[in-house]
Length: 145
Image (cartoon, rainbow, N blue to C red):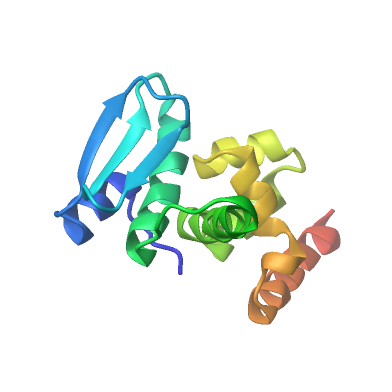
């Protein structure tokens, strides 16, 4: 699911129908299905905007509609998981985990937010093949330490 391109390129190349607007909104980002637009808060750091865009791109690709309560909570959790997968390849995650034990340094290395690092490395969110890949790669660290 990882897309090696940045979210701005993905938005431009894969979703030319979507308009990106920066505005003083409360949330980091919003997807407006009916208006075919993504709005991101205008005071975000670049890493925060990158994460917000991945999140809103997932909403757009799925055609998510407004909802509330448990449905909203489930949709947002699923969206965060998918956005983290778009933002961080399993190979890049392994490299970051080998490079540092600090989640903040890992996030910095991966040009993303700590939340996405935590989501991406959570075993519950990994495909069995990804778990195996990480186990093998991280075992290399133990043998060389």
